[in-house]
Image 1 (cartoon, rainbow, N blue to C red):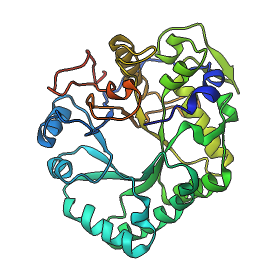
Image 2 (cartoon, rainbow, N blue to C red):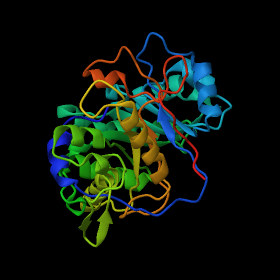
Image 3 (cartoon, rainbow, N blue to C red):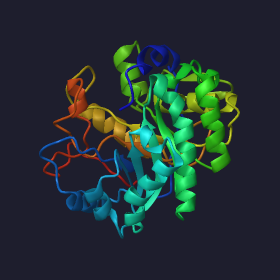
Length: 331
């Protein structure tokens, strides 16, 4: 999940917001499907729940065979994570991974493969060669339409205030990754959590929850009225400074906990996630138009580590009942 490192830098920086026009096109949104629970529905039942709610895309955190089999023959678009970057450190290993984890599931609509999720430390320097090897392996196996990326958290930005000032903290790592994404037509996957900025700083709650607020700030000729759009545009600014202005940002995680911590309640979670669904069709002030975003997460997962909030991000309870009312499709 996106890290708490966002709090200090972004809490002060992102007292800013987004577009306020009303979307008109019918659309849906992706939802992350974590499986760290001992009481969760079967993969087949999970896929049926996505379909019955019109959820168009799923992120999974490993090439989980049972889930991939359940997705076969559906039109649900999928992000498949591979957290073990060393699977791709040679072309031979990457080819073996593709044969084991992609080739058997040709009936699955795999859109992206994420090489690592929120990789940190020295391992970040392995991301680019891993992505390069995986891209070659996919192409050689006939899966060149699948795009390769990596999922980053917001603290890859050393500067995010204001959004136009967004800049990567380690340009030596991120600039080559950004240019690789540009050359391959791949997006940058970003885990974007206004919750952590709210929790860690003096941030207006309504501004974080897509609610009406007086905390509207102008930046570089653009007006912001919610934190989510400001965070995404800070990432776009960093990509521009890294020499990759054409790379899209796909929000690979975003959500709000319904219990377990400061500001965590079912009503706030509903407000945030409904606001996210309502806004993704409009994009951000810097990049207007529909964007891809994935809510974290489908279920409350009772075996997740970390803060108590980590176990309360679900849109649904393990018995498949809604954790709170939400509309996935807006017309």
